[in-house]
Length: 379
Image 1 (cartoon, rainbow, N blue to C red):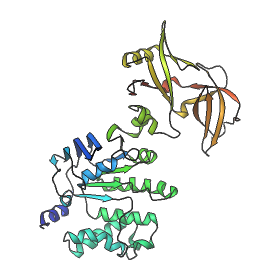
Image 2 (image 1 turned 90 degrees about the horizontal axis):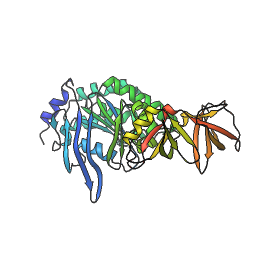
Image 3 (image 1 turned 180 degrees about the vertical axis):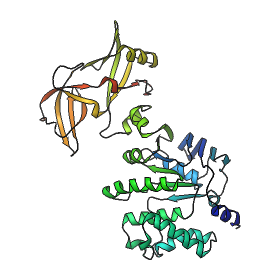
Image 4 (image 1 turned 60 degrees about the vertical axis):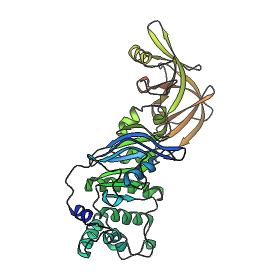
């Protein structure tokens, strides 16, 4: 097998822009459509995080990019080059897996050197690359040890080092934080983000953890049932969700959904939930009416936008306190409204007893409105 062209290309300094583009990409496993007609562009030097529930197709997507799975239809580009039929070894990618995939019988140095030796690099070049990567990751003192002598976080750094020494065009990270404890995950989120900014390598990171996605990403790609539901910055995803799935998937506690009918009364528009009504500004109501396919709508209100009324307020909603969850920096208060529950996120100094009654209000400017049939955002 002639690796010479790949070796020489790998030794070149990366100076060209590297954009990853998926164009109408579909992948099936038998009757199951894992990736369905996906169109997605990852920008040069971007840290894009693909997030979604288990089975949504996110891992299959990066395996297609890596060449570990074959595309059934559609095209994958690196810049303007179609790579569908390009062998894995020539794609200039480096993956970091969930289980790190380190060889237990090798030292960490040899784990990092393994791929380079297979490609025919000189020991001098290998040593240079490994010590440079180890310096970046702060693991110089661990190179003579074996993986079993390391903590989970240290093993992850070795796995990252093995990827860095390849000097890839694209990093593919497949759930690299999922095996770490909660405290280490928080630390490593920041470390991975700093690392990607330093290396300036186009990176696609896959996770099921929406908090991880929102804190790390330049742009978030939300997937569900093999399809991309929305792509945007963390703020865009949170503040302007494209549909009810995105709105419900992102945010802790989850967004409150309430089914309402939208009624026009003289010069005003009213959301009628049965147990309560909310009068909308005229401009907002007219915009919604023009966009919906039915008078039935779903409204979404984030818990931090549910307020406890201390006096006169517009659109008061009578409620009873059902559960109070203190979580240190906040309280999550579950209010019973009719047969439903609305959760409010309040500061910890807000004290309220279970069983007590109160009026709650919504910040009308923060209400998300979704079509009752399509569940697409209309406001």
